[in-house]
Image (cartoon, rainbow, N blue to C red):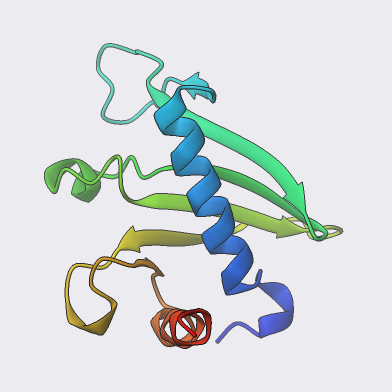
Length: 124
């Protein structure tokens, strides 16, 4: 399991997710042409790069076969991150949960319990 020191805080990832989705909806982000699932070679995938709290982030919608099959290419957000001085990226995927007590909320896959605690804290 990853230690909390080498992964960004839940709050930061959710904040970046919201910023990315807002800017993508506004059409203010650079568009790239993904190699996969893009037979026309069209630039359609919004990308955002930023730095916060010593982290470097690259953020984009998921372009996986599964995301396309389920129509989630405008919902599932993949955040690649690397802390200053690190050589390789890690990633988190954020989705809108569709069941259970987190239904309708943005959730970081693999960190559901932390998201649940975050939403309980911020609901007060």
